[in-house]
Image (cartoon, rainbow, N blue to C red; front, side, top):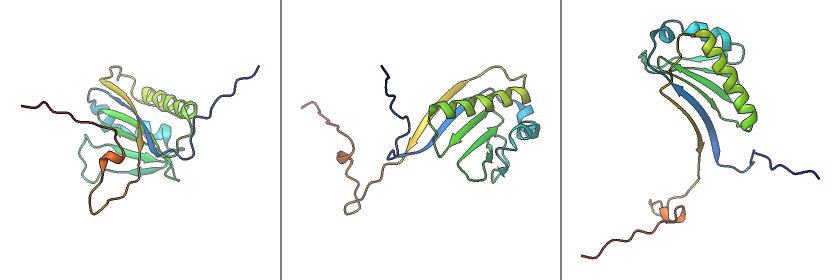
Amino acid sequence: MSIKIKSEIYPNSPLVEVIFEIKFPGEPVVECRRDIFYDLVRKDYPKVFVPPVNVSIEPYRFEKEDKSSGIMLAINKLSYYSRKYPGFKEYRKEVIKLITSFRKAYPKISKLNRTGFRYVNIIPFTREEGIVHIDKFVNLKIQAFSS
């Protein structure tokens, strides 16, 4: 008996981006030696975007040529984002590859403050006479006590 597994990629999904992020205590070596990590990912993420104001908390972005995915690296975080979600198996494989490169570049960073994974959706709507009727998107009922 074979079991059909539903595809995890939905063609009409409002999904526009998937992001995985780790945050760690600020570590100056990341700021000073960003080139070590970049050398490990340069082949896949050749485009470099420098923050407009060089503030160490703002991440540098390394992006694929086709802009389908990229990496953000700052003094206190590493993020991977994908605008063309390939499904969790492929996404997870890339995240693990990047974390492995990060650990190779910065072996002294061993403590994490937070990890996160989020899906970003876009839900198209139209304004009617300048108003967005939220009741068309949310099933919400507010009841107040009478005084």
